[in-house]
Image 1: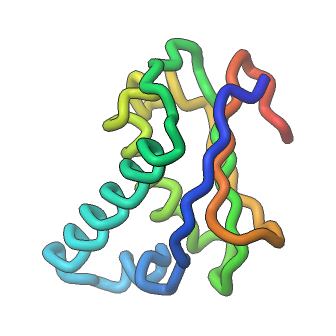
Image 2: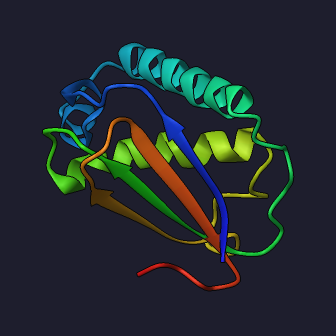
Length: 124
């Protein structure tokens, strides 16, 4: 069952690609990117009137985007999203007890779409 869906209207660029992060980016630049994206995601949730209701059951998360990065270069973006879901108090923790799986898919729409499924009913 889909518990939540929201969209982040921010362009995904190579600045947040997993390759860029692992290429030895200075920690201060990485922190700047993390802080900026957490703020974007957090305020997106507020603007879209997403209630702060803690999902106590395990969830599956799918992240969609239409950009030029390879599929595996979205892991850092996914981490930013999941960490913000925890900060926003939608998920208890980001460990495997509460987040059973994450998946990335390309799609042909604007923005980054995030879907959260519960009760072990993941879409894939």
